[in-house]
Image 1 (cartoon, rainbow, N blue to C red):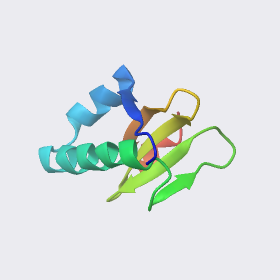
Image 2: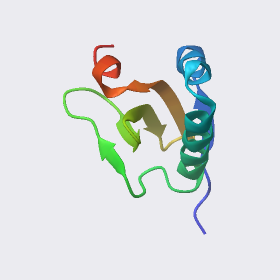
Image 3: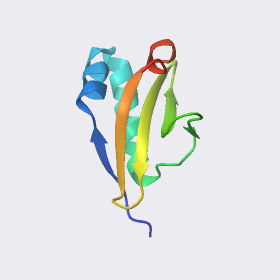
Image 4: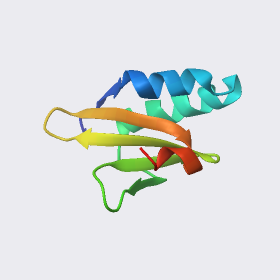
Length: 87
């Protein structure tokens, strides 16, 4: 059985998540939790032109980096598509 990954959320991503509507927060937290079991699962897309991956939750995106050496998924950003990729 594969080892599960730990989840780390950067403070800026956490603040963005707290500003989102409550129903969206619940959906995002469930999606992030699923990354612990399979960080490259269904719906995860490798970013082009920069390091990391993205997960779509409705019209919002969760950006994250996977570290296979330490079995850690670090959430680096969260927000609507139009704003998130400007970072």
